[in-house]
Image (cartoon, rainbow, N blue to C red; front, side, top):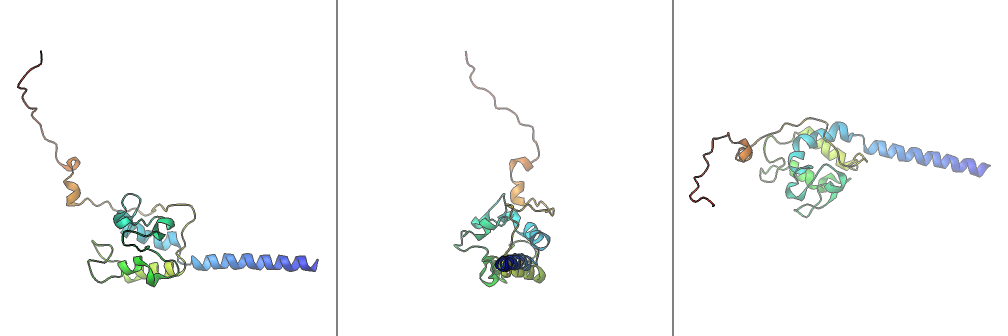
Length: 164
């Protein structure tokens, strides 16, 4: 009986250690802190609809894959080597992400860095859907598409020959 109770105590201790480690790794809280940053600043170009540079940031699996640069965007537990941190923290405007608009704030970069150093914990249920609404921006390039042009009356061409 003594061996069984010792085993039970070891199992309980191990279970608590695993739960504590998971809670410590997710102290940033992906959905509360990281998802708003990614959805507001990254998903337009690196989300489910577009994957510029071969990079998609809405799932852990795709963020860990190598993009066109040959490097993964994330290296869990090592923010200093993660391409994501290098790009959002770049001072050169040609390398900085996002390329247009204001750069991420120091606090946002620190949040991403802490999240990555904590193991880059993601929700376990597949791709992450942005809960925060992001503004749809229509660029001048987008406006060249026929659907953005005003309607016009079109005169059909005159027929030269008629069929018998």
